Figure 1 (cartoon, rainbow, N blue to C red):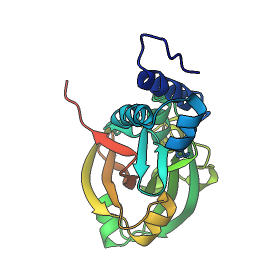
Figure 2 (figure 1 turned 30 degrees about the horizontal axis):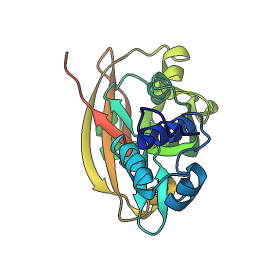
Figure 3 (figure 1 turned 180 degrees about the vertical axis):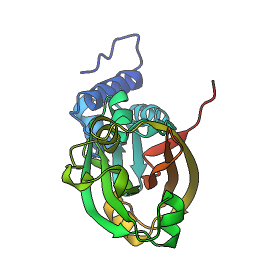
Length: 240
């Protein structure tokens, strides 16, 4: 409850109370906050006080308002430092979030001229294709399509990539040493299928990452195209 005779202003107290409820998940991500009138009645305060508290939370990026709909708890936006040789699972775990995947498609296809050139394999060679929806705390965050030369990781599709990290499997099961990668980042509008899987309302902006990863010997081990939920993901580069 709020203390009206405290030296701490009421709007600061209310903002702290709501912030604490968010941290304890009493107000989970994407949930609607009580209306201004409900907050006024519940805590015996003025509408101006409520609006000041909500403005503070909005400035902190914790809530957002939609005209005619109310104020909602904002899902955290992930600042993803570009660490290409770190797996998606490791990246999220560093941020205290639970990573999971839904395998949308997995198959082996013959390399056409384009994939033969990109993967450094003969035309017609077997190529593994993995299409996954990546989730953070069960919320869609990215779509990834990965192509790998099958001869470097035979029987790769026997692993459950809804539960296993691809990089961990490549390192632990096939003893492959990933050396470096090249990544191109661009912005785009989500196509209908991307918007549907990522839970976006079109038109919606997405971030696209095109990454080629190399082994110590110089050969290509994977080419991955990732489509990130732009409202929840921010790609960051840092130099030492």
